[in-house]
Length: 80
Image 1 (cartoon, helix red, strand yellow):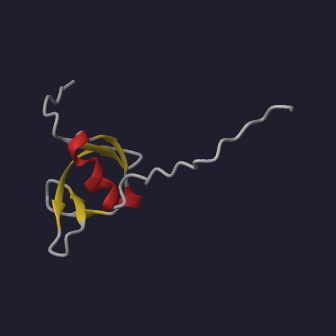
Image 2 (tube, one colour):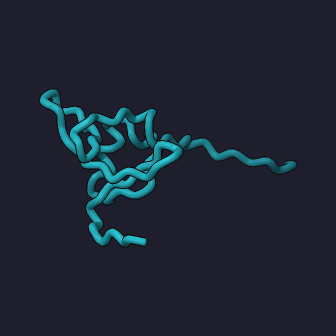
């Protein structure tokens, strides 16, 4: 078993295989993931497994990570 020590690597699964991907920025500024052959990977094709924290904002902009939405309203399932 190989161990990848590159902490800047992005790993994703397509359900059958784990892929090492690279983050690139298109000419229009949209962040995209590509594989080692340069093929663009769409956000709905993979589930990210590991990514560097510094890339998290770009991955969210590209649609690879869900945008966290927290409601400020408290919810309670208790009897008053």
